[in-house]
Length: 498
Image (cartoon, rainbow, N blue to C red; front, side, top):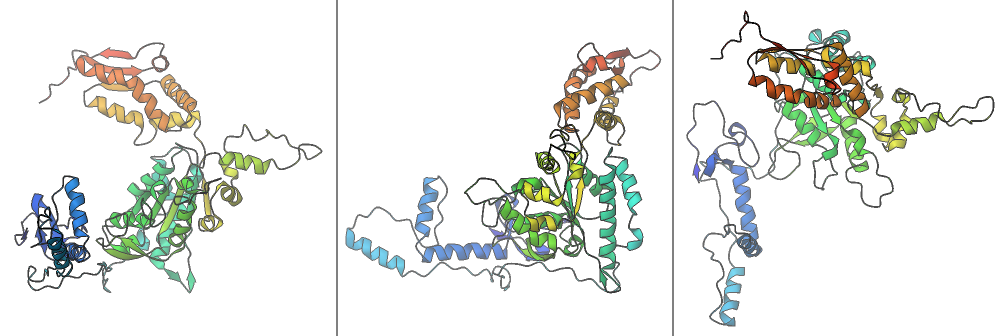
């Protein structure tokens, strides 16, 4: 173990292997084997921990455990492992008393680091100080209007017109709110969004596309991995840790970002359970302060708090939260509410009146979501309900060919690298969409179906250099025939690859 005084000219800083801080933040590093480095804080804490274990007599137990596991033993300097006693009980008692009176192990790293006093307290990263002449983080003149945001989303997402309007207006107002802060003593409150829709309708893809189009820190987190503080799993603050990483650890920029929490319906209260619900209602209660707006201590570069990880304070007042979930079986709750009226008399309604209605989620209310298992305090902090409609056969056919990043365009590009033209006729689009509707998994079924019938084509085409064009028909999708293959003409031979 030697001090790393040699700085290379690569332009990269050394990073502590424990707390992941750079050399400019943590100070000089000690270089270990395998190219690893450790800062003075983490190294000092390690020695102090070994010293405390030595003073309390716990180091022998740790050494025995490591020896049984085949690991090298950890012993303080000057102390040897106990050998079998050959001198009787008196000698053994004498060794025990001398061990208890031995001073604890201590090593001061100040001499190694040129007289520096390592900071043994938990490190906190401060916000970057902004000067008066610095440009604002968000220029209100450059904020795209809602219709421009929706026009950009239309290029990638088919349908969901109402949902795209809600997202566009929410993001536009979020930009303006952060840019102006206050307007003539009128403080603009943020409006968090709850997105509901069946699986495969485009909830996550909508937010991911928004992240590509807008220059704003955006983090996508998964609610299924969150647990109550103190239990195995990600802490609730890990949602903000991902946003901080998306903002390059710039706290002020992260405080004006957007967070999308996916699979939020998995946090619903568990029914008929006697055990503690550490990944359901408890997480909802822990997220209340995030959604409302508060100063949260966030671990930097980690998903949980511990002594080795530096912390920073993030204010969530200007962070827009978008929560999304499929909410399976929510339609049954909506049907039960709509069918409360009597089925006999002048105002009677049939109980199966709403069974054939496809977009029941459009009729969702706050009461339905609370009955599903979301606590009232959580739902109250998500005032905008954004239901997404299920995909029909026509929409699935358009998803295959219309978006910029359509699935079939991806395969056409793959075969174009082999100088083969790939085409689909109208019957193929309809056949693929029909099969996808039968699987009832939304747009995710499209890729699974295409992978099946494109397997043989992608395998056979590189064998024959004379193939110039392949046309996929509906009969081939349904298993009634094969694709139409055209041979390359003599006038357009395939170019030899270099």
